[in-house]
Length: 140
Image (tube, rainbow, N blue to C red; front, side):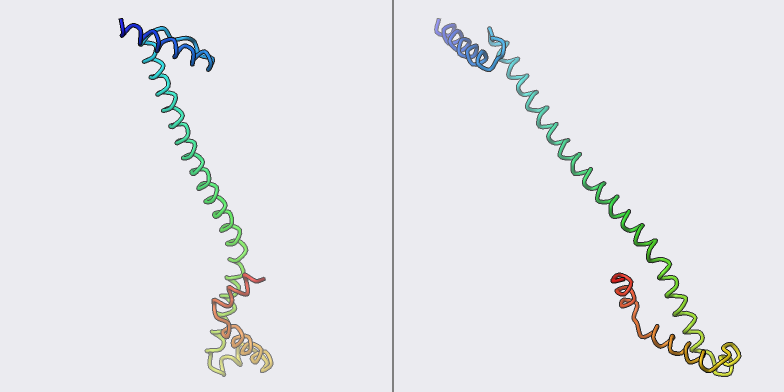
């Protein structure tokens, strides 16, 4: 008799709390176990949903950063490759001319004034380090 009284009392209190929550009433222990199982499933689903939502958010951030970095690299590369190429050509040509013997310089470059300009260009180009040239480009 005590067991059935506890069952009846528990069942009534559970029905009252479910009525307040808008749930359908529960009549026996099987229904209570089913409710617990459904509640566990709901909690598990919510946990998985939150977990995958977080993972998806992180993946999206990483992909966005990678795309942005790649785009910035592409733009910077396009802007700097021609300037760097030209800087290298000027350094190379002036170095070659500066290393030639004087009689060969006279044959290649007609006037002393132009030879002096090449020598001045060579000195000014080689007085600037590669790091300084990059800084000039960046500041410009």
